[in-house]
Amino acid sequence: MGVSLEATTEKLTQASQTGYYGKCVRISVIIPVRPGDTAAKALSALRAVEYPPEYLEILLAEGTNPSRQRNVAAAQAAGEIVYFLDNDSEADIDLFRFVARSFADPNVAVVGGPSEILGSDSLLQKCFGYVLGSFFAVANVRCRYKAVGRWPQRAGEQKLILCNLGVRAEVFRKEGGLDERIYPNEENEMLNRLDAKGYALVYNPRAVVRRPHRTSLGRFVHQMFRYGRGRIHQFRLHPKFVNPVYFMPIGLLMYLVSLVAAVALGTPREVLRWYLVPLWVYLFASALSTARIVLDEEDWRPAMFAPMLILAVHLSYAVGMIAGLLHDPWTAREKVGAQSGGEATVRVLKRLGVGWE
Image 1 (cartoon, rainbow, N blue to C red):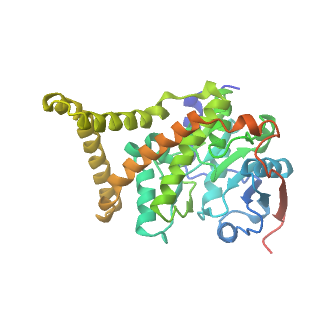
Image 2 (tube, rainbow, N blue to C red):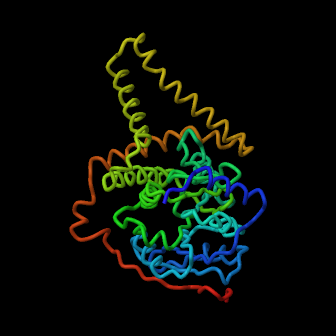
Image 3 (cartoon, rainbow, N blue to C red):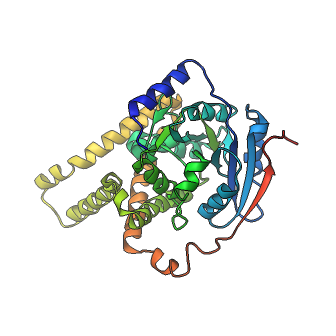
């Protein structure tokens, strides 16, 4: 099953440089929705993509457990590729052309791209996206929110996001799909599992969707909290995929708490001066990251929000991880199965072999 990194990367780069879009593959697009949701924005964008419609199947999976919804829909999909979008994922016009190009290499099992900012987002929403696209804020996870690099590249779970992700249907079914006990972070576990088995995972920065970011600071902080908690839940269920890097925000939180305690306890100024060095380093790195955002976006306004938002990302993620460490939600749930409300109803909105109605 193992595929050399060099061989796959060379094939992907050659295809990109020659402008080859790849042989059209049959793609089953799967969109999980809550009961009553129509996924109107996602469907409207799909109608505009430049890809032969007879090679597209559209499935709407209705329910309250996204992992189960995706699994049930994937079991019914007729395409060679199952491609996961969210109900608000607006596919770029060239999305599937670039996806097909990456899947032209038969060794590639997974292809995904970034979920970028919507032009209609408010300034605050755009700042959420800018920060999530910052290396200092989220390291390589930034690739999920910003196109990084020019050509397709081998990737791990850090660079791939479930709202813009394609998997060979045969591989998805053979390897058990998504773990229905995990939400969010369910794709991280699956991608780690596939990567560990030697499947080639590819990040294509030109395979783009656009989604709106959270509409308020409170919702953004809660999103990061849930990501941190979900990461711990993933590690609890699959400890072999534990990565110490994800625990760094907890180290920052512990440092800041100890710093406040040191000041409150009247630590001598000479000692406190050295204790402040990590804080100054952090603030300097945050300032550099903010400057990079301002230069990249050619807009000074993100400077008003970015430093605060970077800190919010780190601390809310850390608190979420601590919450996950203190409480294991799966023990009780596993007695009655995976997440409650797990029924999924799949509707085929468009079949393969026909055009748009």
